[in-house]
Image (cartoon, rainbow, N blue to C red; front, top):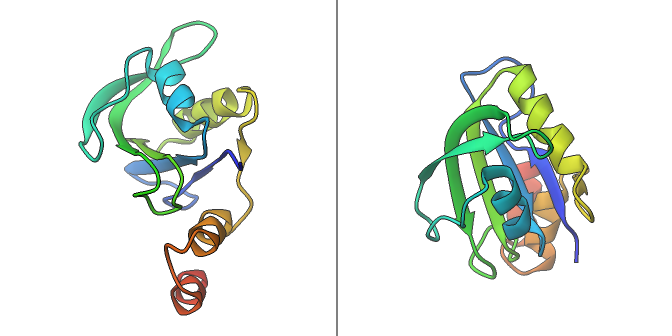
Length: 130
């Protein structure tokens, strides 16, 4: 199974950044970053996002948990909504990339998984790409 993460909200300065994670390692990644249990499915939950190695607070933000197959990709999926500064995004990406079997997604890979898992059709996938 593919375990990937990516900035979902797009690059550049913004007030809020959304980082998406999908795959069988998603729940582990969220528990490691927040040092708490998973939030209830589909309920926006305020959590501190912590550095994996030092427990230093990176940011405080909203975590959403979407267990598969009822998610965009058809796999377990989570979204982390944090402040949009480059420092926050880079710190979270750095820590996620250091987890086993979790890697940065290629462009369009979340949509590709959604298509492959029957969550969207080809026309929808192409319209997302546009």
